[in-house]
Length: 312
Image (tube, rainbow, N blue to C red; front, side):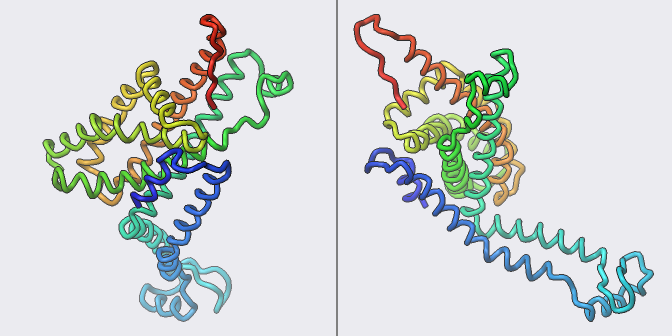
């Protein structure tokens, strides 16, 4: 897993073909969807509608057709649907999901966090487009007609970058860090000292030196610019747009609940729920920083006699 992760985030090891990231993401999705087969088959078996013979047997146990536990549709010999069947279906679904997160932690982490990150970026892009149009003082349709906004301005490569970052780091890597590495270092306890140690380690070491930089490195692979430029963009967003401060203000209290209350096999799902809203903020900060850099590049003109360098 870590070998695949390092391969994804390490830029410029080999020339990156424009469509390579999309093929790679497609292959990852196929692998993880196929891995759901084991859990899906168990759910299908448990959720099967009972036969007429089974229903007749249960009638003998729970009473006749007028019993409140039964709801009969049709005449004699017709299909009988028990209210308990609906309850058992819900229980089977919940049990299957719980089993999936317990028995396949990496696959469940990748799917949960990858899809969540992609959806969060969709929300952020739509909100940014709407704010841009409103700032100009006319409707979105007028903006398209006048040429100030494109009818299809969705950035697919940016969304792919968030999908891979969400699945590979926020999902798979954090599953290993929080549920395997942290227990070895700090123990399995949920006492205040252990929880505080984990939260401080995550906030002061994991986040500034791994969690946030990885997002910019993944984006550099997708957009094909250098590792140095990725780190420069990360540093600029930290210093100019308060990226770390915003992260700490949200995640410090959330991680206290993560390590102190949430069951271990559901921690990544819990983090995915909260990080949906964080990634909307993060995506907006990243886009804002990029716009500021683009404006600076466009306005630096030729004061020193040297033309400006405009990155991708």
